[in-house]
Amino acid sequence: MRRLVVTAAVLLVLALPLAYVVRGVRTKDPRFLDRFIRLQRDVLNRGMMTAAGRTNSPIAVIEHIGRSSGRSYETPVTAFREGDDWVIGLPYGPEVSWAKNVLTAGEAVLRIDGDRHVVNGVRVVPIASTALATRMSAVIRLFGVESAMVLHDASVR
Image (cartoon, rainbow, N blue to C red; front, side, top):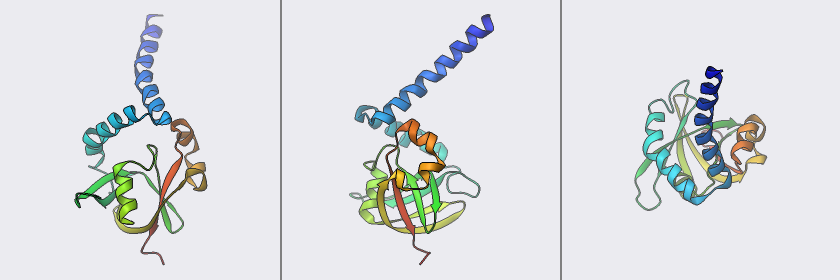
């Protein structure tokens, strides 16, 4: 009985932060998103960048230029091939800095599976209009993802 109580307590301790994150992303609460995106940018992304964009990594890197600063940035993303395009889900919406940078520039470089792809023809679409809507439907529903970024692979004519 004691083991069951301890297991239940551990699961509860793990579930509460996850529920908090899911709620914050689903509701697009700006106070939550500002803090969470800052945490992700300053802490979590650093760890992801060690493998992102490399062969056999599920994480890609989008290289983009800052709208105001003109600085080069690298942001880890999850990208999926869809015909001649790449699709990236936007769980925090299209207002995050990297997405605004790519939209403003109209082009970027996507490093995925050890290859570099120049991408252009950037647009934001409803996620339901992409293959991600079926490929990742459970995650999309859980986090309330509404939009995706579609980037054309410039090497494909």
